[in-house]
Length: 135
View: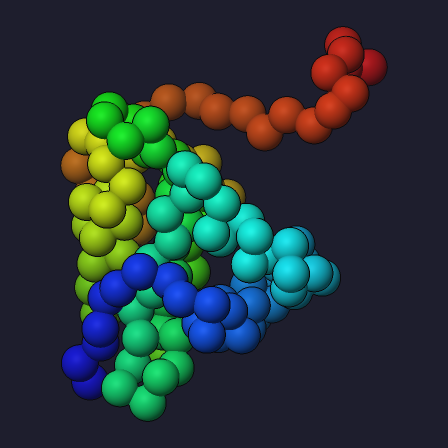
């Protein structure tokens, strides 16, 4: 099946939300309006892989300074389309459109996929306010 890799459009929102829900990621499904704003915010590049029937097979959301570094915020691929190069295609198009020479990311679910790509491993953190000493 041939997929079209392209920029996210508002009509893709239900498909993106379905992928997030399937992954158990609650933020976008909880508030579709907020999700749309997040996917189209300044500095954000969101791309999709669309099947011929219009189904969203995968999506990626990146933030970038436009020149050097990009950060992969989210990426999800429908299980029916995994192991077919979809995630790599999303990363390629996302970085090309966002601008940058590298992508930084944090993962808790797909380390083997990223280990298979050319990479340099770092330790990372996700911080939550209020920013005070941990107890």
